[in-house]
Length: 326
Ligand code: FRU
View (tube, rainbow, N blue to C red):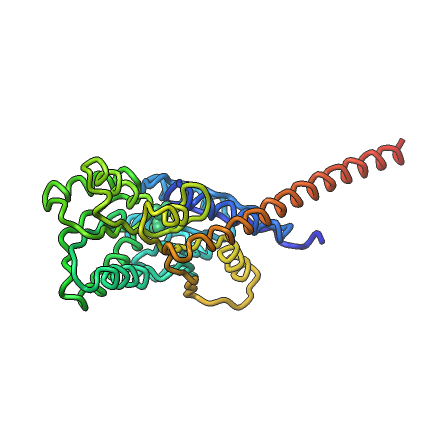
Protein backbone atom coordinates (compact mmCIF):
# COMPACT_ATOMS: atom_id res chain seq x y z
CA UNK A 1 0.00 0.00 0.00
CA UNK A 2 1.15 3.54 -0.66
CA UNK A 3 1.76 4.65 2.95
CA UNK A 4 4.30 1.83 3.46
CA UNK A 5 7.72 3.24 4.29
CA UNK A 6 10.52 2.66 1.79
CA UNK A 7 13.83 1.74 3.41
CA UNK A 8 17.34 2.30 2.17
CA UNK A 9 19.79 -0.10 3.84
CA UNK A 10 23.41 0.97 3.47
CA UNK A 11 26.21 -1.51 3.80
CA UNK A 12 29.82 -0.44 4.24
CA UNK A 13 32.23 -3.30 3.52
CA UNK A 14 35.87 -2.91 4.57
CA UNK A 15 37.19 -5.26 1.87
CA UNK A 16 36.50 -6.94 -1.43
CA UNK A 17 37.03 -10.69 -1.63
CA UNK A 18 35.02 -13.88 -2.06
CA UNK A 19 33.94 -13.96 1.59
CA UNK A 20 32.47 -10.44 1.29
CA UNK A 21 30.96 -11.19 -2.12
CA UNK A 22 29.12 -14.16 -0.67
CA UNK A 23 27.75 -11.97 2.11
CA UNK A 24 26.68 -9.21 -0.31
CA UNK A 25 24.86 -11.72 -2.49
CA UNK A 26 23.06 -13.19 0.52
CA UNK A 27 22.05 -9.71 1.66
CA UNK A 28 20.67 -8.93 -1.76
CA UNK A 29 18.69 -12.19 -1.80
CA UNK A 30 17.42 -11.16 1.66
CA UNK A 31 15.88 -8.01 0.18
CA UNK A 32 13.70 -10.15 -2.14
CA UNK A 33 11.48 -10.92 0.84
CA UNK A 34 10.49 -7.26 1.07
CA UNK A 35 9.13 -4.95 -1.60
CA UNK A 36 10.05 -1.78 0.26
CA UNK A 37 13.80 -2.24 0.67
CA UNK A 38 16.74 -0.98 -1.37
CA UNK A 39 20.24 -2.19 -0.54
CA UNK A 40 23.27 0.00 -1.24
CA UNK A 41 26.72 -1.56 -0.88
CA UNK A 42 30.04 0.30 -0.78
CA UNK A 43 33.41 -1.46 -0.57
CA UNK A 44 36.40 0.37 0.86
CA UNK A 45 39.09 -2.01 -0.36
CA UNK A 46 40.85 -2.06 3.03
CA UNK A 47 41.25 1.73 3.02
CA UNK A 48 40.20 3.57 6.20
CA UNK A 49 39.94 6.98 4.53
CA UNK A 50 37.78 5.56 1.78
CA UNK A 51 35.53 3.75 4.25
CA UNK A 52 35.13 6.97 6.25
CA UNK A 53 34.14 8.87 3.09
CA UNK A 54 31.71 6.16 2.04
CA UNK A 55 30.03 6.17 5.46
CA UNK A 56 29.81 9.98 5.45
CA UNK A 57 28.27 9.78 1.97
CA UNK A 58 25.59 7.36 3.23
CA UNK A 59 24.85 9.67 6.18
CA UNK A 60 24.50 12.69 3.88
CA UNK A 61 22.12 10.72 1.66
CA UNK A 62 19.95 10.06 4.71
CA UNK A 63 19.97 6.25 4.58
CA UNK A 64 17.65 4.53 7.07
CA UNK A 65 20.19 2.15 8.59
CA UNK A 66 23.95 1.62 8.33
CA UNK A 67 25.50 -1.83 8.39
CA UNK A 68 29.26 -1.68 8.68
CA UNK A 69 32.29 -3.98 8.92
CA UNK A 70 34.92 -1.51 10.15
CA UNK A 71 38.35 -2.12 8.61
CA UNK A 72 40.14 -1.51 11.91
CA UNK A 73 38.88 -1.04 15.47
CA UNK A 74 39.50 2.68 15.80
CA UNK A 75 40.21 4.28 12.45
CA UNK A 76 36.65 4.51 11.09
CA UNK A 77 35.02 4.94 14.49
CA UNK A 78 34.44 8.74 14.21
CA UNK A 79 32.39 8.28 11.03
CA UNK A 80 30.38 5.46 12.62
CA UNK A 81 29.77 7.50 15.79
CA UNK A 82 28.69 10.46 13.67
CA UNK A 83 26.08 8.30 11.90
CA UNK A 84 24.86 6.95 15.24
CA UNK A 85 24.71 10.43 16.81
CA UNK A 86 22.60 11.60 13.89
CA UNK A 87 20.01 8.97 14.79
CA UNK A 88 20.87 6.41 12.09
CA UNK A 89 20.77 2.91 13.58
CA UNK A 90 24.15 1.20 13.19
CA UNK A 91 24.72 -2.55 12.90
CA UNK A 92 28.34 -3.66 13.29
CA UNK A 93 28.94 -6.97 11.61
CA UNK A 94 31.95 -9.31 11.63
CA UNK A 95 34.32 -6.57 12.92
CA UNK A 96 33.94 -4.29 15.94
CA UNK A 97 34.92 -0.77 17.00
CA UNK A 98 36.20 0.28 20.41
CA UNK A 99 33.10 2.44 20.92
CA UNK A 100 29.71 1.48 22.35
CA UNK A 101 27.90 3.78 19.93
CA UNK A 102 26.18 1.12 17.87
CA UNK A 103 22.70 -0.35 17.82
CA UNK A 104 23.57 -4.04 17.43
CA UNK A 105 26.44 -6.38 16.62
CA UNK A 106 26.21 -9.55 14.56
CA UNK A 107 29.14 -11.86 13.88
CA UNK A 108 30.95 -14.87 15.24
CA UNK A 109 32.98 -15.39 18.41
CA UNK A 110 36.53 -14.79 17.20
CA UNK A 111 38.13 -15.43 20.59
CA UNK A 112 36.49 -18.84 20.69
CA UNK A 113 37.65 -19.54 17.15
CA UNK A 114 41.28 -18.78 18.03
CA UNK A 115 40.99 -20.90 21.17
CA UNK A 116 39.57 -23.87 19.25
CA UNK A 117 42.41 -23.67 16.75
CA UNK A 118 44.96 -23.66 19.58
CA UNK A 119 43.34 -26.69 21.19
CA UNK A 120 43.11 -28.45 17.84
CA UNK A 121 46.83 -28.02 17.18
CA UNK A 122 47.73 -29.10 20.71
CA UNK A 123 45.67 -32.25 20.40
CA UNK A 124 47.04 -33.11 16.95
CA UNK A 125 50.59 -32.69 18.22
CA UNK A 126 49.94 -34.62 21.42
CA UNK A 127 50.85 -31.55 23.45
CA UNK A 128 54.35 -31.11 22.01
CA UNK A 129 55.54 -29.11 19.02
CA UNK A 130 56.58 -25.85 17.38
CA UNK A 131 54.00 -23.45 16.01
CA UNK A 132 53.86 -20.19 14.02
CA UNK A 133 50.97 -17.73 13.87
CA UNK A 134 50.09 -15.29 11.08
CA UNK A 135 47.57 -12.72 12.28
CA UNK A 136 45.07 -10.72 10.25
CA UNK A 137 45.37 -6.98 9.65
CA UNK A 138 46.82 -5.18 12.69
CA UNK A 139 44.13 -3.28 14.58
CA UNK A 140 41.19 -5.15 13.07
CA UNK A 141 39.08 -6.78 15.75
CA UNK A 142 39.00 -10.39 14.45
CA UNK A 143 42.82 -10.37 14.29
CA UNK A 144 43.08 -9.15 17.88
CA UNK A 145 40.48 -11.63 19.14
CA UNK A 146 41.70 -14.66 17.19
CA UNK A 147 45.20 -14.07 18.52
CA UNK A 148 43.93 -13.67 22.07
CA UNK A 149 41.98 -16.95 21.94
CA UNK A 150 44.89 -18.82 20.35
CA UNK A 151 47.45 -17.56 22.88
CA UNK A 152 45.07 -18.34 25.77
CA UNK A 153 44.63 -21.93 24.59
CA UNK A 154 48.35 -22.54 24.16
CA UNK A 155 49.03 -21.37 27.72
CA UNK A 156 47.56 -24.69 28.86
CA UNK A 157 50.08 -26.66 26.82
CA UNK A 158 53.63 -25.90 27.98
CA UNK A 159 55.01 -28.37 25.43
CA UNK A 160 53.68 -26.33 22.53
CA UNK A 161 55.99 -23.47 21.66
CA UNK A 162 54.61 -20.46 19.80
CA UNK A 163 57.91 -19.81 18.06
CA UNK A 164 56.97 -16.62 16.19
CA UNK A 165 53.98 -14.41 15.41
CA UNK A 166 53.87 -12.22 12.34
CA UNK A 167 51.08 -10.02 11.01
CA UNK A 168 49.51 -10.18 7.58
CA UNK A 169 46.74 -8.09 6.04
CA UNK A 170 44.13 -10.84 5.39
CA UNK A 171 45.49 -11.19 1.83
CA UNK A 172 47.10 -14.33 0.42
CA UNK A 173 50.29 -12.53 -0.58
CA UNK A 174 50.71 -11.13 2.93
CA UNK A 175 50.58 -14.68 4.33
CA UNK A 176 53.33 -15.69 1.96
CA UNK A 177 55.52 -12.76 2.93
CA UNK A 178 54.98 -13.29 6.66
CA UNK A 179 55.88 -16.96 6.31
CA UNK A 180 59.03 -16.21 4.30
CA UNK A 181 60.19 -13.75 6.95
CA UNK A 182 59.53 -16.22 9.77
CA UNK A 183 61.27 -19.08 7.97
CA UNK A 184 64.25 -16.78 7.49
CA UNK A 185 64.42 -15.93 11.16
CA UNK A 186 63.46 -19.18 12.93
CA UNK A 187 64.12 -21.86 10.32
CA UNK A 188 61.91 -24.65 9.03
CA UNK A 189 61.69 -26.82 12.15
CA UNK A 190 57.97 -26.06 12.50
CA UNK A 191 54.98 -28.39 12.91
CA UNK A 192 51.93 -26.17 12.44
CA UNK A 193 51.11 -22.72 11.12
CA UNK A 194 47.90 -21.04 12.24
CA UNK A 195 46.93 -18.25 9.85
CA UNK A 196 43.91 -16.10 10.73
CA UNK A 197 42.26 -16.86 7.40
CA UNK A 198 42.48 -19.49 4.68
CA UNK A 199 43.88 -17.11 2.08
CA UNK A 200 46.90 -16.29 4.25
CA UNK A 201 47.28 -19.99 5.17
CA UNK A 202 47.46 -20.77 1.46
CA UNK A 203 50.04 -18.01 0.93
CA UNK A 204 52.08 -19.34 3.84
CA UNK A 205 51.96 -22.83 2.38
CA UNK A 206 53.25 -21.50 -0.94
CA UNK A 207 56.23 -19.98 0.88
CA UNK A 208 56.93 -23.33 2.56
CA UNK A 209 56.48 -25.17 -0.72
CA UNK A 210 59.06 -22.96 -2.41
CA UNK A 211 61.53 -24.18 0.22
CA UNK A 212 60.50 -27.81 0.01
CA UNK A 213 58.80 -27.70 3.43
CA UNK A 214 55.14 -28.10 2.47
CA UNK A 215 55.14 -31.81 3.31
CA UNK A 216 56.59 -31.26 6.75
CA UNK A 217 54.54 -28.33 8.03
CA UNK A 218 50.73 -28.32 8.43
CA UNK A 219 48.62 -25.25 7.79
CA UNK A 220 45.30 -24.24 9.27
CA UNK A 221 43.13 -21.21 8.56
CA UNK A 222 39.69 -19.71 9.11
CA UNK A 223 36.69 -18.97 6.84
CA UNK A 224 36.05 -22.41 5.31
CA UNK A 225 34.17 -21.03 2.34
CA UNK A 226 32.26 -23.49 0.20
CA UNK A 227 32.79 -23.60 -3.57
CA UNK A 228 35.76 -23.88 -5.90
CA UNK A 229 39.06 -22.96 -4.28
CA UNK A 230 37.30 -22.27 -0.97
CA UNK A 231 38.62 -23.43 2.39
CA UNK A 232 36.40 -26.51 2.67
CA UNK A 233 37.73 -27.83 -0.62
CA UNK A 234 41.30 -27.04 0.43
CA UNK A 235 40.78 -29.11 3.59
CA UNK A 236 39.17 -31.97 1.70
CA UNK A 237 42.09 -32.03 -0.71
CA UNK A 238 44.65 -31.95 2.10
CA UNK A 239 46.12 -28.55 1.11
CA UNK A 240 45.05 -27.18 4.49
CA UNK A 241 44.89 -29.41 7.55
CA UNK A 242 41.81 -27.67 9.03
CA UNK A 243 39.70 -24.56 8.84
CA UNK A 244 36.83 -23.02 10.77
CA UNK A 245 33.55 -21.83 9.30
CA UNK A 246 33.34 -18.06 9.60
CA UNK A 247 29.71 -17.65 8.64
CA UNK A 248 28.55 -14.93 6.25
CA UNK A 249 24.78 -15.40 6.82
CA UNK A 250 23.62 -12.29 4.99
CA UNK A 251 20.05 -13.48 5.58
CA UNK A 252 20.51 -13.06 9.34
CA UNK A 253 22.12 -9.64 8.96
CA UNK A 254 19.20 -8.57 6.79
CA UNK A 255 16.65 -9.90 9.30
CA UNK A 256 18.32 -7.97 12.10
CA UNK A 257 18.26 -4.78 10.02
CA UNK A 258 14.55 -5.24 9.29
CA UNK A 259 13.73 -5.89 12.96
CA UNK A 260 15.44 -2.65 13.91
CA UNK A 261 13.77 -0.67 11.12
CA UNK A 262 10.32 -2.07 11.82
CA UNK A 263 10.74 -1.62 15.59
CA UNK A 264 10.43 -5.32 16.35
CA UNK A 265 12.31 -6.83 19.30
CA UNK A 266 15.95 -7.74 18.62
CA UNK A 267 19.08 -8.64 20.57
CA UNK A 268 21.97 -6.22 20.74
CA UNK A 269 24.70 -8.89 20.59
CA UNK A 270 24.18 -11.67 18.05
CA UNK A 271 26.64 -14.53 17.75
CA UNK A 272 26.38 -16.91 14.82
CA UNK A 273 27.11 -20.62 15.02
CA UNK A 274 30.43 -21.85 13.69
CA UNK A 275 32.20 -25.20 13.32
CA UNK A 276 35.62 -26.73 12.84
CA UNK A 277 36.28 -28.25 9.41
CA UNK A 278 38.68 -31.17 9.10
CA UNK A 279 39.17 -33.91 6.55
CA UNK A 280 36.48 -35.89 8.43
CA UNK A 281 33.59 -33.56 7.63
CA UNK A 282 34.80 -31.56 4.60
CA UNK A 283 33.19 -33.80 1.98
CA UNK A 284 29.77 -33.75 3.66
CA UNK A 285 29.94 -29.98 4.10
CA UNK A 286 30.77 -29.52 0.43
CA UNK A 287 27.79 -31.63 -0.58
CA UNK A 288 25.49 -29.58 1.61
CA UNK A 289 26.89 -26.34 0.23
CA UNK A 290 26.27 -27.53 -3.32
CA UNK A 291 22.62 -28.22 -2.48
CA UNK A 292 22.32 -24.75 -0.97
CA UNK A 293 23.83 -23.20 -4.08
CA UNK A 294 21.35 -24.95 -6.31
CA UNK A 295 18.46 -23.73 -4.18
CA UNK A 296 19.83 -20.19 -4.22
CA UNK A 297 20.18 -20.26 -8.00
CA UNK A 298 16.56 -21.36 -8.28
CA UNK A 299 15.48 -18.58 -5.93
CA UNK A 300 17.34 -15.99 -7.98
CA UNK A 301 15.83 -17.33 -11.19
CA UNK A 302 12.34 -17.15 -9.69
CA UNK A 303 12.97 -13.62 -8.51
CA UNK A 304 14.07 -12.56 -12.01
CA UNK A 305 11.02 -14.23 -13.58
CA UNK A 306 8.60 -12.55 -11.17
CA UNK A 307 10.23 -9.22 -11.93
CA UNK A 308 9.86 -9.84 -15.65
CA UNK A 309 6.16 -10.68 -15.27
CA UNK A 310 5.60 -7.63 -13.12
CA UNK A 311 7.26 -5.40 -15.71
CA UNK A 312 5.17 -6.94 -18.50
CA UNK A 313 2.06 -6.56 -16.39
CA UNK A 314 2.70 -2.90 -15.66
CA UNK A 315 3.33 -2.26 -19.37
CA UNK A 316 0.04 -3.92 -20.21
CA UNK A 317 -1.67 -1.73 -17.64
CA UNK A 318 -0.19 1.37 -19.29
CA UNK A 319 -1.40 0.22 -22.71
CA UNK A 320 -4.84 -0.44 -21.30
CA UNK A 321 -4.96 3.02 -19.75
CA UNK A 322 -3.91 4.59 -23.04
CA UNK A 323 -6.60 2.61 -24.80
CA UNK A 324 -9.25 3.81 -22.36
CA UNK A 325 -8.10 7.43 -22.66
CA UNK A 326 -8.13 7.26 -26.47
C1 FRU B 1 37.15 -11.22 4.55
C2 FRU B 1 38.03 -11.48 5.71
C3 FRU B 1 38.02 -12.93 6.10
C4 FRU B 1 38.28 -12.87 7.54
C5 FRU B 1 37.45 -11.67 7.90
C6 FRU B 1 37.82 -11.00 9.16
O1 FRU B 1 37.21 -9.87 4.16
O2 FRU B 1 39.35 -11.06 5.44
O3 FRU B 1 38.93 -13.70 5.38
O4 FRU B 1 37.93 -14.01 8.22
O5 FRU B 1 37.58 -10.79 6.84
O6 FRU B 1 37.06 -9.86 9.34
